[in-house]
Image 1 (cartoon, rainbow, N blue to C red):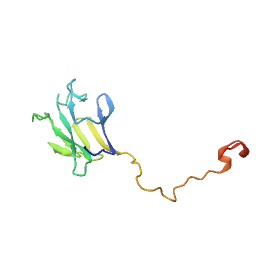
Image 2 (cartoon, helix red, strand yellow):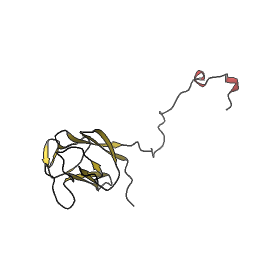
Image 3 (cartoon, one colour):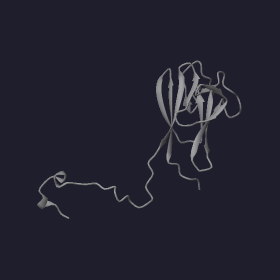
Image 4 (cartoon, rainbow, N blue to C red):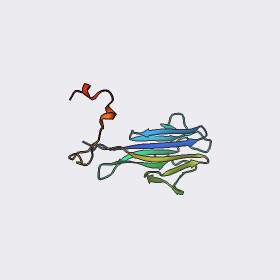
Length: 144
């Protein structure tokens, strides 16, 4: 059974139509100009199948996404990918990585950590103090 991730993966796209947010949950996403891709980019400078996102698992069980230029069959995009200022064929995405697909078409990748449920004993200093005037009403009406 795979380990449960305590992270959310978010991709924010900016193109000619504005800004869109995608929460990444699927194992594979196609990205490009074609209407049939999973994440559509609106720009004449973007290939129909510009890039592919593939979910991978690290040794510690945490998940991440790798972006690959073109499609999974090896057909590269016309303009390639510029990731954090470097032209790359593929890259394991890390928090706040920026991917440029073409002029005024980019994406920012975020890893959002969810709060985990504490598994240890409660902290003896983590208490909430309530004064009687915070309860409202007459103290004689309170039931223990």
